[in-house]
Length: 298
Ligand code: GRG
Image (cartoon, rainbow, N blue to C red):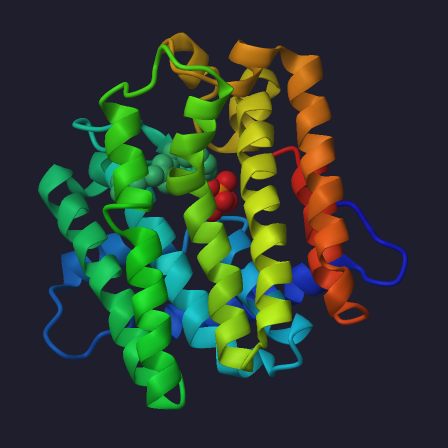
């Protein structure tokens, strides 16, 4: 990971991931009749090694807006649950049909398709239970539920996935590609920041800064994801590489070339970090995270 001078993202994220993983583990120990195989499948995917980028965004956003990390932990877990569900369903034969995720066989390869679908359903549902019950006060919890439902719903995550699968805009240009990824990838990153900000009681100026940051970061993340798909190695990525280009999917390097894609990712990260100015000096973590997204190798 890339170090910023005043803030060690490496040190912070190592410890924060531990806290997130501990909370995710606790949230998925069911003693209320959840079938053992189902909870095993949920935990297999949820607790697998991942970057925990969305939880980190929620936790860093609450701090950037002057709030307390522990207040945002339920939201950090909720976004990771939705993310894990979307990966399980995306890997299914009816969708992207993948065998490898996070360095190990996909959920349906281990537990079968039916249980993998149900594990995804249960993680999606659990996310809202956790938000509604554990975010305080209840009026903020309700606002968080509405924000997350919108970001995960038919006009964002699910809608972006539907358009992507339908090959919508496949003959379009960069604008078409951005329209898919703003919903499929960007919306969950943006809402992670918005949840942290909402829990911290952010004002309009802080919310606007995080929104600009999140929109730029989401697009930059997708460009680097496409670049890694071209350049990356299966072992480092923990998933099959070259799959997008092999399937004739629109990608940034495919449309713009590697050099221009890299330049765009750099420009977006520069805009993202500039957007954080109103939040300084509390946004050092988010600054470092933007640099990490640019230089990541998995
Ligand atoms: C099934 C509703 C539904 C949506 C699926 C998440 C998704 C939408 C598709 C996954 C395919 C993909 C490669 C999307 C682009 C970027 C992305 C979301 C990568 C995975 O996220 P990371 O890199 O993964 O944060 P880790 O494992 O580190 O959490």
